[in-house]
Length: 255
Image 1 (cartoon, helix red, strand yellow):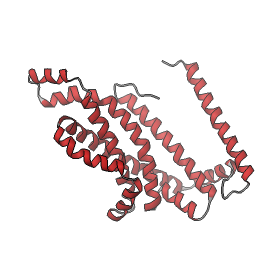
Image 2 (image 1 turned 180 degrees about the horizontal axis):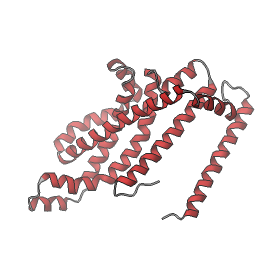
Image 3 (image 1 turned 30 degrees about the horizontal axis):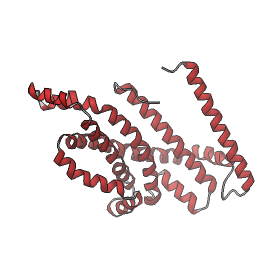
Image 4 (image 1 turned 60 degrees about the horizontal axis):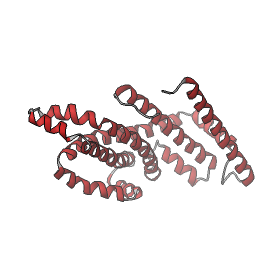
């Protein structure tokens, strides 16, 4: 257990590190002296504060968060259920494993371009988020099941325990640590690929559209400001998600 002094020291170190890199950013920007290539932190945060005051900023933020959450939740539900089935049934595992390998081997950009043909622009990021998160969840669930002590399973079958209870009381508790790790990893990836999909699909309200427009109109301050928004929101979502997992699940989640 970390003491309060250790925690406070870590926070101070993080703040010092942040200030250090902002200073480095300022020095490099002044040395280049061309806002089009690298705007100063002052101009970037000035634009960011102006954006925060607008209603469209918050509509954009919530629209992107909704897409990430929707795709991520579906990936978790389907990944866990299908992962349990494939972990128990080797034949089903071999059938689905080919698809998972193909998804992992294919560049995200290819799937985004294909999704642009299949779906409306608003739904493309959701599909891409699901497609990238699902293999991570599925692989972890299958791996967790394979690491379960087979003696427990054999004992349950000897005493003719109902399969529902075997899954609920043996399989699920054993794979929870694998699931939580996979969910944390896939959330970060899901956030990145969703924004990337938004850049190409350009829904009306999305962070990706803001990034794309900033690039097209060569508004470097806007581009860097929205990049900061992406980073901050990613860290916030991960922190909130870890906090909820610690409250809900009986496992230790690394901070």
